[in-house]
Amino acid sequence: MINKESLIKDIKRMGIAPADTVLLHSSMKAIGPVDGGAEAVLDALMDYFSPGLLCFPTLSWQTVDAKPRVYDVANTPSIVGILPELFRKRPHVYRSYNPTHSIAAYGADAEAFIADDHKTGTPCGLGSTWHKLVDRDAFILMVGCRLTTCTFLHGVEEWCDIPGRIAKPLAFTLILPDGTQTVIHSATHSAHPSTNYWKIEEGLMKHGFMKEDSFGQARTLVLRARELYAYTAGCLSANPGLFDEEKEPALNR
Image 1 (cartoon, rainbow, N blue to C red):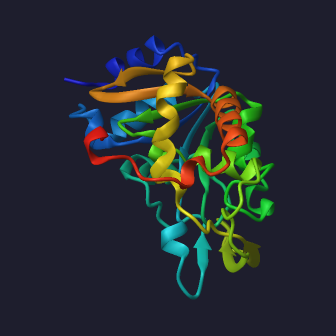
Image 2 (spheres, rainbow, N blue to C red):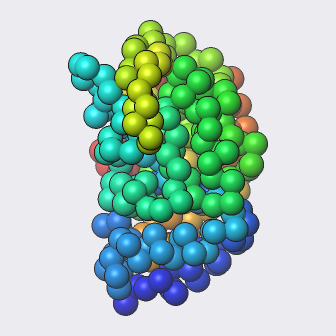
């Protein structure tokens, strides 16, 4: 049976220290049956990373893409699985104010980490929490997920100024955790190239920038933010349209 203790051992085996910064994309189903369920998974991660910084994406672009466009930081649900949704509601977890691509964080400087995320004006702009992952050389774990769900790579495309990625800004009503309301303007994505992010997996593995491990029963891809940024930026410099090309053949999935 998978339990809190075995999950902590999995994290230690990956070479990740309690004081590190880590972002998890996750599939609870892939992790398998855990004694205590999803809450026990979060207990393990939050206990282990309390000296560092634990982050989950709490994206809501699909939820807020309606009129009127309202992003309620405390109440707008995440659309990326049960672990982020439960995590964002926990005590001492801070969720950023980006209306479409928020991150929730827990740890020593979590509140400062997510501050001003909404001021970038784009989903993953320079100065956003996504870009701060590079500054901290965070670990990025794809727990039961492919790179096709790696939001950080949307950020890399923004920072590399790949054409056709960002739409015009839209007005959002932002409701802060204390109930204060304001109107902000933020752009959304105008394309969905993530279906082709699989194209760099082989190269990342070949160069040692990505390794496979396991978290519970989930096949887990382990990456570092700086290496992933540098490698992807190099690929896009050589071929800006890399992720615009054909989708992955079905047999390769």
